[in-house]
Amino acid sequence: MYVVKIIHTPVTTHTVKIEVDPSWVSDFNKNGMKLCCAFFVRKGGREYCNVVAGAFAVRQHMSITWVDKYAIAATKSNYKARDKVAGGTTEVEISKGQSITVAPDGTAASVRPDNNVAKDAFRFIHTESPAAAVVYMTVADSQVPIYITNTHPDHPGKQDLSPIEKIKIWFDDQMEAKDYFDDISNLTHLVYMWSREVYTVQYTPEGKWAFKKAEKTEKEK
Image (cartoon, rainbow, N blue to C red):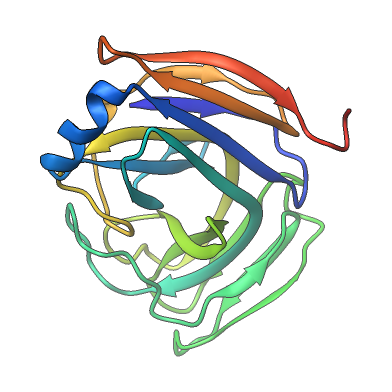
């Protein structure tokens, strides 16, 4: 797995290009391996990622593009590894510095600006009934779940959630998009990125991840 860290800028498009050595491409496809990605959210001072945001057929030249546009839904479902994550309410768009409140009957939610919320976070409020939050982000032009706050409904309360600047990428023959997972830390590899740049990483003939280059976007050139 490869973990890419970037610095957040509102409504920015980010891209990671992946170059897979040709010696691996046919072998991966023959064995049903896909390139998977997952994103991080900070809650309670800790960083979490637990939903497969995308799973793609392996090619020699690939890219993952995402936009930091978010939405939240509430769910009362219970999840275990490889269950498909989905909200029980309609996804509602939300920006950092806002809060979302789930209706008493748990069927709807409303968003408003909230001066009590940090500028890099949004707040999930469910004071009337147990619920978990499902965070969505735009990945590969689709709004997909990237994080769920718990595998079962949390007790009524408030939670501050802050999407952060990390993406994990790895090859997997079991996981699919929207799958919940609880532990893939043994596959982690880390590299740091800066915002408004396109980064290229390689999967080498030796089966290792390596950073190749960073490119500025057109706005920065």
